[in-house]
Length: 409
Image (cartoon, rainbow, N blue to C red; front, top):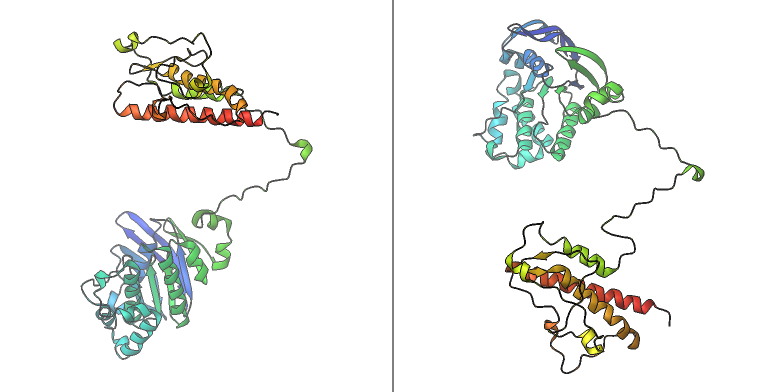
């Protein structure tokens, strides 16, 4: 059994640990919880005989005082430490690292039996026993570090942050392995920040705050302690339960006001004009080309059916009424949008006379690619505006088709 009483550690004027007291029995897992800088690593170093600070108090193994003795003598008494960062020999193979762990006299006679026990506990190490350790993953190196400590045939195994840097899956496998180590009769003192998983496998636990042990209890009691949950398990105040509201008390949702730029009863043509207006650049001085552009007026006579559905290049376009004005690179966007809307409106009568179907274009009609107005060469923007206008015209045509289909016979 490991027993610590009134253990204090000073680094110069700084007191890192003060009057710590704990004990670990055979076949027992004891977890030490604490924030960064609380003194957990200092506690393990003082127990293992490798602390650089000034220590005082008492650390006994089976009644034999360990404080002040060399680290190798402490290992001979049955206490093995797995330090933070693993501390494996990276240039040696797995089996060579494990064999070095059997150097103490207490382990030499049982080296083969301990090696088989480690391989049974970590089957992956048996598969890779000839692999150089530095080429292994972090989880595999942690297995090597624990296996090497177990090769010393310890009674108490102290581990400092064994899950540091491991993936969640490897952490789960590691803690399962520690449960198997406990079943072999070895006591474990575990310093770990993963409080949830460590408490799940532990028998007892201690809380270390600012160098002092402030609380001791069973693992299950610590797991359900609100203060521990808040500090170490990510818990907090539980949200209040939602109460059902009767229909009479339910307030109607506020009506969403209509946006000024999107009136509720706006036609598809006007919406298309507003969308195209947003493609124009911010207000700027008009260019010479823009000043030369002239508005086009509505023709005096209504065009024929063929002209309404298959406009020629010479077809005039209606002047915009509700569409916002604006020109981009010498092209009147508003006029072009109004042109598409006018063609859609003129088709309304033709659709009713032909059951909502577009008439067959006359033989003398131009090809569909000449339907769109002639655009000036705008470089890369020409194709984009041409495609946008084509989409607007198609959308207006579909809206009118749907409107005609919905009209009563």
